[in-house]
Amino acid sequence: MDATKRANIKQGMSVAIVLKQDQDTGRLTDGIVRDLLTKSATHPHGIKVRLMSGEVGRVKEIY
Image (cartoon, rainbow, N blue to C red):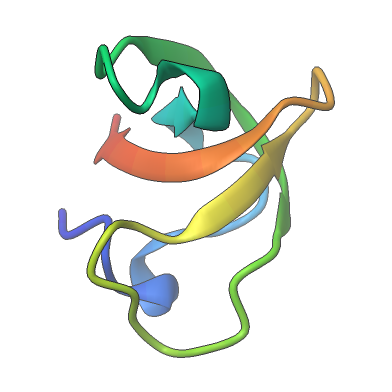
């Protein structure tokens, strides 16, 4: 699924995000979506979400 489209991401989904501090390395962090933070329908770098753990980043993969 396309992680740049907000409609593809829902609360409770399992995703991999890239945290702000990991953008240069591209290291991914797995988690469950708690909140969708991007308001627009699409974003070229991925939809920004908050995970259940409280971490915030842009979705790169949807499981």
